[in-house]
Structures are given as structure tokens and as C-alpha cells.
Image 1 (tube, helix red, strand yellow):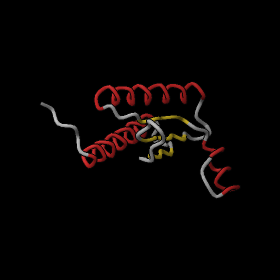
Image 2 (tube, helix red, strand yellow; image 1 turned 180 degrees about the vertical axis):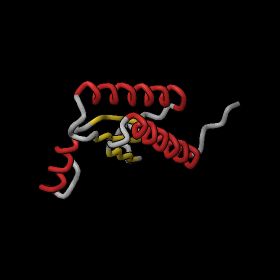
Image 3 (cartoon, rainbow, N blue to C red; image 1 turned 135 degrees about the vertical axis):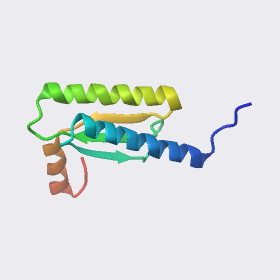
Image 4 (cartoon, rainbow, N blue to C red; image 1 turned 45 degrees about the vertical axis):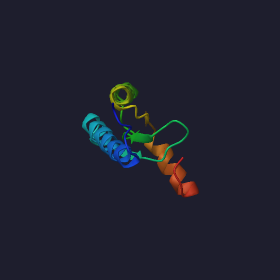
Amino acid sequence: MERAPRMTDRRALLDAKLTELVLYAKGLCPEALVEASSISYEDEDGHVEIYPPPSTPEEEEERIEMAIAARAGAIFDETGLYIVCAVFDLAAREEGIASHGTRP
């Protein structure tokens, strides 16, 4: 009989998979700012936000987003961890920090 994973095991797995996604995102776009968070909302286990440089063409942003989503999907299939990944506009992030002191 398979035992249920302990919370510390799940947290270590989440940390490992967030790190995996961050490194994968950096491999896709080395110049991007990549942030990961294990803060969970409802059924989400974590988040990875990717902010490519403003000069990145839209087609390249879409390629990055599709690739990171596919990797996150594979992680979900393998582990059951639901990690939301998205590509955002770096200028909007910086503007939000400058005007509000927090992320958008």
C-alpha cells in the first residue's frame, strides 16, 4: 500500500519543481527576469512569472509561454503539483513597482 506523501515531502518536491521551471525558463530566455513563488491560491501550488526584455518579439514570448506551460503540464501529470506559469510585460511590472511599491 502506497503511503500519502508527508507535507515536508510535498514542500521539498514543490521547491525542486519550482527551481526546475525557473532554470528551464532561463534556458528559454536567459535575459528574462524569472520569479517563483510557493504561495498557493485555491488549488494552485505555486507560480512562475517570466518577464522577457521589452525588445523580445511577441512570437518569441508566445514560444516561451507555450514551452513553459508544456513543462508545467508534464510536472502536473508526474506529481500532481499545479504550478501556474505565465509571461508578463517587464515594463508593466516595473511601472507597478514604481507607482505602488508592489508587484502588479
